[in-house]
Image 1 (tube, rainbow, N blue to C red):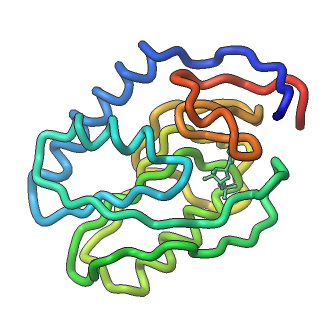
Image 2: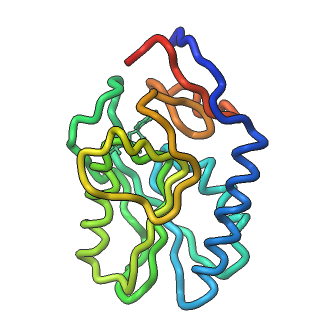
Image 3: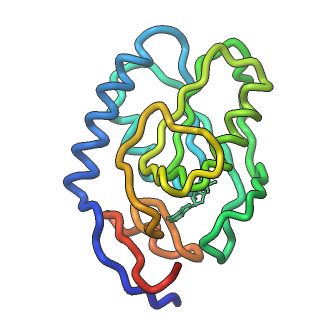
Amino acid sequence: MTNLNTTQLIDEKRIAARVKELGRELSLLCKDGEWTAVSVLKGSFMFFADLIRAIDADVKTEFLGVSSYGNATQSTGEVKLTLDLTSAVEGKNVLLVEDIVDSGLTMDYLAKTLRARSPKSIKTCALLFKPGALKVDVKPDYVGFEIGNEFVVGYGLDYQGYYRNLPYIAQVNNIN
Ligand code: IMP
């Protein structure tokens, strides 16, 4: 078991309020045309479940799996698709939902991969955004919270597979 020293960064109430706001904005986006919301696994599963319930429009849901950092906390720059969509997105509008944009390499890779499948449009939404850690130019279209370069866990985000079940987001003090 891991032995992390954590401090709560964003509590459940703030998360819920922000997810509702994002849901309202995305309801406006998704009310026109055919939209597919894509959850990037594993980290976005909890955010995605709350977010799509806050969207008042018809949306399909799909899931994409990508390899994570493994046991490290630094991006390797290598992104591997571990689970693919089950339906074609050609000519469809895609809303890509990520847990966090850190280096931006994952979102950049996924946006390029999906663009190659000729969707009508792609919008991106991330619960968390670390602008100070970006290595590629990919600002998400919708952001829950901007944070510093600290490593965070909870509400779907993990450290070595643990802490995803925390209902709040915590910053880790004893790893870098
Ligand atoms: P990227 O560096 O933007 O490509 O981030 C890739 C993935 O790394 C994210 O989708 C997360 O799953 C994971 N990740 C990045 N930063 C953190 C963090 O602070 N805590 C937990 N996972 C993270």
